Length: 112
Length: 112
Image (cartoon, rainbow over all chains, first blue to last red; front, side, top):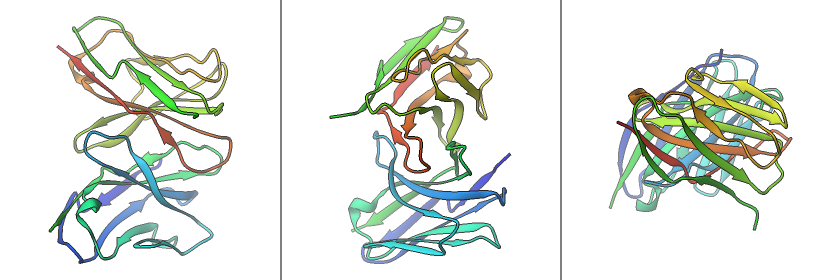
């Protein structure tokens, strides 16, 4: 079955710097790759997603890139702010299965 | 407003007891999922359902069961609770199209 690996497990950056979180997946049939943000004690919430027919997607300070050949995708956050501090999860799914396989998460700390 | 709710939000039980966690959504989504969240493991899929009377096993289904008698509810039952099932449980739902999963607020379960 699908396996998603996520790195790093923790990331500390200075406010204003960029942060990059990377994920790799094992199943070449996977075609949907969302990123979720989870603040302490809260539920995960989708922040951006990308489908396999697109190489990059941006939404303000957040971008996701996808390399299908290498089977990896990355989340890029620019101009980080303290409110970006949270745990970020990548995930992958394929076809019409709708079920997501999640990475183990990255705890991002943005230092003021 | 449409929403997804879970109850109880916190539960303490003893080893060997049967426990049922409720999940209710008012979006009329066909697809519903149960995950458990443990430190270092991210979100792992327990069971999922694509519609009434449909249930499927996920990555970590041993010791858990679900039933789907209507569109709105997918209760998760721990047949005989074990300390290893101490975790935070999230249910989620998504409509019939590939896309965002909407998560409930979570249930923190402690098995003593």
